[in-house]
Length: 139
Image: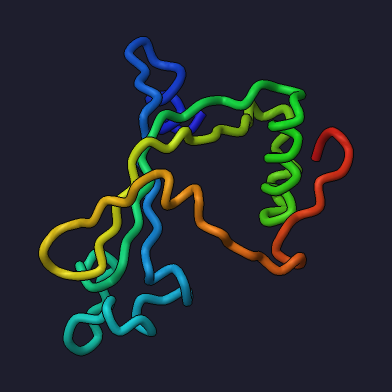
């Protein structure tokens, strides 16, 4: 297992809390093309406060094997990352995060916290091409 999964689930003092961070620099594949991520000439820093970051924190939970939830998660994962279809038999499992805290920063002066109800209540309309088809019971 990856060391982080040992820390979350397998060690004697495992603590299943984690954070997941997204940075504005990831939107284009390079922080050089996001003005807030550029400092001076030739130095790009995705941790520069004007380079937006969004952090989700919560409890990580292994999805129960052979459940609808796990099957749907695997389908979505393999649709986006086809190489994951080759991980069967390697001790791979799918984990979800039960988010209990959200914050973001896109400037100097500290982070802003978002209500969970605002985040989960957002009305996002994705084009059908961005929603993986879920059929069957496994990858």
